Amino acid sequence: MPMSVIVTGASSGLGLTTAGELARAGHHVILACRSGRGADAAATIKQAVPGASLEILDMDLASLASVRSAANDLVASRQSRPPLRAVICNAGVQVVEGVQRSADGYELTFATNLLGHFLLIQLLLDHIVQPGRIVIVSSGVHYGPLKSMGFPGPRWQDPRRLADPDVASLDSSPRAGRARYATSKLANLYCTYALARRLADRDITVNAFDPGLMPETRLDRNYPPGVQRLYDRLTPLLIRLIPDAKPVALSAANLAWLATASDVAGVTGAYFRGRRQYRSSKESYDPDRANSLWEASTQLVEAARERVRHTEG
Image: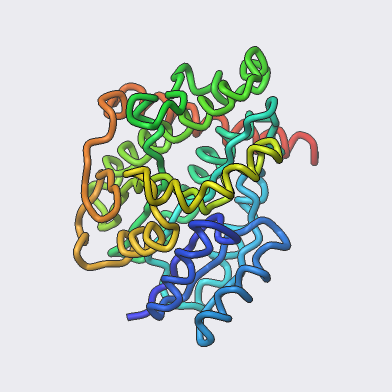
């Protein structure tokens, strides 16, 4: 039966290819992209899947007001599409040069990769038709350098400090930027496990997905031009030689499977690599950190809303 599936970051890379997989399977796909990017994504998918059922949702995860507006629009028009049964939280940024701020004044990596998705899920929870699914894209970099080819590991601290760009600016080196990315992916796991526990009385599953290293995607877009060119040239070799490297088409097929397949009905609070469950890092199962992140995220989202109200008033 056709269902509606939201894919964030659907304008390129894993999100775009996953959206194409879902459309090919006959689902109605809601392409959640920053303004101006959805039309190109839809055109790309329809070239490969002429009968694709697609909808563009303008949404910038780095702006909590944009997330609220997009969610409100989606709920208001819910009668015009098949029931919403899955949300794929895929979008992400990695800032390696300096420190950037979100529209709400938070550190951009944390704001986009965690807070924007956190708010989107809260706003849509009561509108996901059961049985429903939420899939949050994490990454193997949360394990630390021994399991991620030397990529800096997470540097966990109070979530309010993680969201503070002034704290981040104390170390604005490229390596610190990569560590902030790894930390955000650890935060995605805390959010996954905390949400799965909170939804134990509902038929909505919540799982994390590790797509592996995907050299074909443009997560390196903020790297220096020379590094990008070298990375692009090495992509075919990396896919062949690195065990954890995956073609984006394969990761997309696995992500679409996790969001819709009957094979994983009822499975919740799990970490998937490909189509198999794995243990995430020991650090990722800390319930106190997960609860602290949940409370802090709630407060940070509300604080941003209050600032907007004060400005408008």
